[in-house]
Length: 75
Image (cartoon, rainbow, N blue to C red; front, side, top):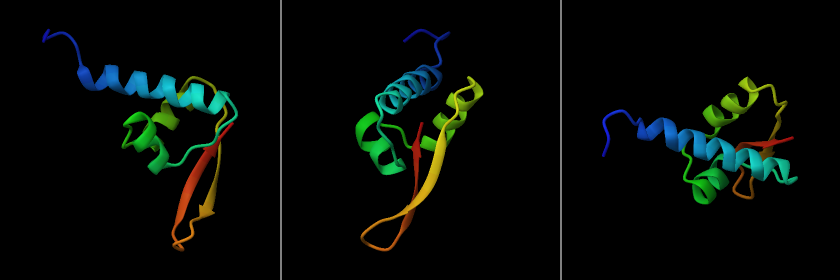
């Protein structure tokens, strides 16, 4: 592997673009979905990256059948 390539940075950028495409297609996403669909264990960080690019991302808390609440992101 080359020394000048930051694997984490490249992976984060890839996850960000995949998540953004998912949102632009009219879908919403939660942290669990992001992990299983895109391998992202840091959805809030990827959403922050997307927001830094000037894209408005909305969010709301949703209650799961097991009673837990998670944040759902959408455009």
